[in-house]
Image (tube, rainbow, N blue to C red; front, side, top):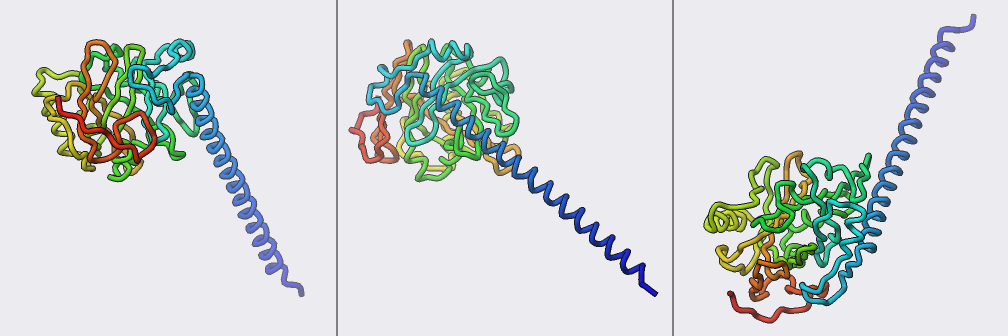
Length: 293
């Protein structure tokens, strides 16, 4: 007499394995499709911001002085009326327009042309909405995403490494009101709820105390700096740390030279540490020694 029970059991087992195989195949295909879409999103984001850089008229290889650096503001404003600046950091991938919204939420998810991302979310580099776009504040906060493809403010996060920080001491913020050449002075790692944003200060002493606190908390050594009381305007560049949910890296820089009306610059120092203070990408270029004002 045939053993029908064993035959039936083998058939059930075969159907079970086929079902597992089909499910695994579906999951694999879905994962490959998702990875492909994410890769395309990254490519599209890089292409989009590369085109914006081309259309801006800004040449990062131009060896002009800070007052002669130019951006086609009419072209940028025609695309996005919220444009307030252009940010460039030599020796990094940071070369982006800066916008300012009515809050700090919109440009987390919207690109420069107003497109909302859905997988690889580039967003925009944006100024804190509490900052005055006429550049009259004492401290300006700019934000950008920490992207896995190395774009946006990923290079800011990389400056927790001392060697990388030293290579990227010069920052340029260009605006319709005038241009700013900055020099970094601190890199801090904070929680998202750290009360860092403070556009203005009641007294010069309060600002000096704020700046000194960031120097003291810096995770890298900034080398020689001006007396903190001489720093009248500063910028902060913030991004997520991608290590835990509420961590932030914040890079601080003071105004070393400016062409903006009503603000003196030339807080030059001897360049014993880090990158030369010039509009150059050559790390071997050295500064001439300058006296403190």
